Length: 393
Image (cartoon, rainbow, N blue to C red; front, side, top):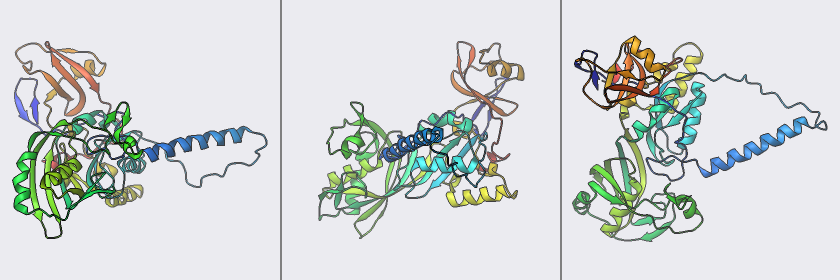
């Protein structure tokens, strides 16, 4: 991380802060690795719960209903301010939306959101932002992702994974050499047609909604970037294991589909694990069981939930940091611009994250000799334990 200091010098600094916003990246329906949308079933369930709540309120106001509602034996826990990132090692079968709800409950957090949907059949890194970290979610979503995935040859399915119905079959099985020879065609900047079961909008409707209704839609190719695609294993069981590092908007399911079509044997994803999301690595991931155990220890006074948090600014690794004085920090905190003058003023431009006394203050833009605050952080509450950023160096 590049640190711009007040005297114009450059120092190396590890980025540890990230800003948080209300979660708009929720949902699971076959949306791919980078898009988040509410799951239809969860949405319908939510609507049903609201109707039930309305019915209950009407019933409680009706004098004919003289029975008191049954009291919950468990005391209601108050929500609190929690700021930081938890990199959940999401288990297979759990939706990203459910994972966010579980962590929000465990931490009693007021706000939570995730940085990129991971399909229920996939495992691995699901970055979950708590509190002010939600303001930095877009920076993580724009970062690279790395996947390890297994392709089963011989069948193409309508969802391009094991959940779908078989639509094409072949008795042919590719050789390892044939697979390797094809990979350069899927490396670099390529055009990719999203899966039919994806979150792409078609005339205001999600593609997965139209597919569930039996409609076949023509999705246009989109440019995506595959930084690396390698064949890791090629067994005699009709399956191949790959690793891919890709940019925003890439559908790994579509990779399996297109490779299978060109080879003439067809294929679909039968296993998928995400090992990298932006600045978050596999070593940052924490299994749900371990997180629940930590919460139980913290409840009994034997540990702290802060130990599971990464600092908010961890998501800002690729952004320069600018240290300011306390006087300038006060102006920025009020939403006022700060003039950058004199020989000590930074000569860069663009987005920076601002610190004061080593503490994250704001995201700001440098331009026309001014430092203009765009996002101001309020990190009052539970934050990452001291030294958590140093553990990642």
